[in-house]
Length: 138
Image (tube, rainbow, N blue to C red):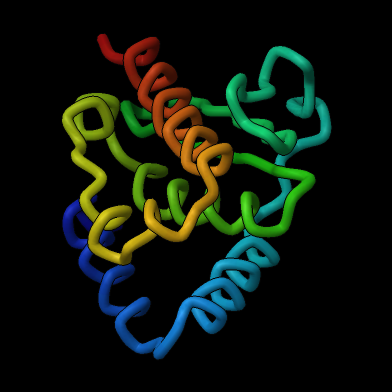
């Protein structure tokens, strides 16, 4: 697995291939379809992210100092967004996740494209992932 910075650079390059936001949204939807299924036992009220307009479940587990996230959402765009976040932050150490600066979000122009409620949801997803990392940080 590459570093968080390297993965973000790959994502920025991928988004540069698209001419417009319709194509980028189609790509985000495809990423959501490829998101590995979260174990149904983790689709609980406790794992719902607060602050998201749609329902987003996030679960994390740590093994050998590496955190792996799984997630699901009932909204296709949101599912794609969380798939991108998981691609960047999953399989990293807690320290790397806590220190990470998710620059790819601004570099691909995400924030300008999202509605206020989706942008708030994105912030809530990142915050939830970092809270998990803080909990696992020893």
